[in-house]
Length: 460
Ligand SMILES: Nc1ncnc2c1ncn2[C@@H]1O[C@H](COP(=O)(O)OP(=O)(O)OP(=O)(O)O)[C@@H](O)[C@H]1O
Image (cartoon, rainbow, N blue to C red; front, top):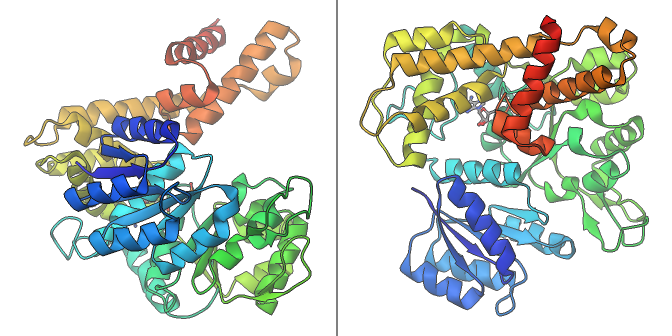
């Protein structure tokens, strides 16, 4: 089991983070001071360290240098308040794995941790079989679609070309962007990923280009934007189609002129940042619908890579399964015997609408349910696949448009609106009902009741 150290002089941050990580099967130690933490680091080996940048006794930069002297291979993720972003960027350049601004988001923490572990394990193979998975557990695949895709990646990675990556959700667009970065000449520089889908219209420009103190209400400190953070490395813009036309124009200018100007600032700053963007919609369709600037599209489209959905890469399933089992074995600290060929065949018969992400979560769940030293059982795989298929069916049972328009019974209308919201969230979290209930701020039982209610009224 992986051991994590949390250093923060705020006991509530320590406690919250520790209990969250424990729930995800990590061993945790906490420390309220830099000095105490350094003693712990002398005593125990940690797989990852979360460290508040502003500790009362030791400043972040000094703390980082000390940690690295004792445990050079351990990844350090700094936790910062808004004010220290610039310093945190310098820390990243010095080798810190990442920085997180408070408030902390659970999904982001888990995702970062996973990347940190993956990069630490880079010299090992995911499965112990070098021919099966690539060194850092990036699965290249053996299907003809994957071979073609990867030959393009090998061509494009060493260049400075901008790349558009298209593919359905969960096909691995961000993972591929990171791989391109790792194989590029900028691999020593930072890889900064921005989810444009979650940026508000008002703050998108400031997130990308930074802002000067006082530039707008709420701009109480200078802020470094993602473009600048990625200087010398790669900026990955996920769901680029969500940027407003105005911000698209600013982006085009920054890419063309290789200079950025902060919101509210007058100085230009040179940046040397490679751009990779992703979209799960066809960007050219968005251009035709006048939702995406044609000039920006052509500027970005120095090369386009389309990742096929998993159902079109069934020959890769075995490799993905092997890689994800190996990953789960490490996370859960147990050995699991490999699934039979008929298990793999069963997996191949499912359509995986959530693509590689759905498969990965599925294998993690199966591994958790399989006792140490046992083989993955066909019955278990069958049962869990049935559950996935059932969830997919529930999703398909959408509320007919006619119902929405003509239903003037307020109770019915609100029931249907709730149902649509629940389905939308369920889809977003890969039909994990616990997660969906948490996001919707209701308990699991209420979620089931609401689903059943709508099912019953659909039957009556
Ligand atoms: N080739 C691969 N090798 C190993 N893991 C992969 C690969 N492709 C995807 N994954 C894993 O699948 C999950 C989803 O990948 P990723 O987030 O890159 O997908 P995405 O296409 O960017 O999704 P979205 O469109 O929802 O943003 C991640 O956990 C990632 O590590």
